[in-house]
Length: 118
Image (cartoon, rainbow, N blue to C red):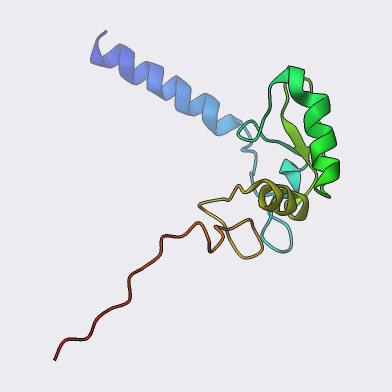
């Protein structure tokens, strides 16, 4: 491909791009969460589709009633529901903010006390 053809192709590309309106992806509401992503279907917390009924019963028994979709992904309704679900099953978010499911203290490694030398 020659430089002229490439330049013409890029000019056409930018001309078409300039005519379009850009969609803004600002959906952060009050509190910093994204209301557009709820309910959340979490693939990371999914169960096998054959275990959906059992998982629903276990969730109810743990006090976090949660439905699962046909693929086995739990349907989490909001941040609080996600936090309660993760804490009930021992999961945590490495990028957690205030109020999200965080690593519990018994999971953290125990540090040896420092011995002071004179």
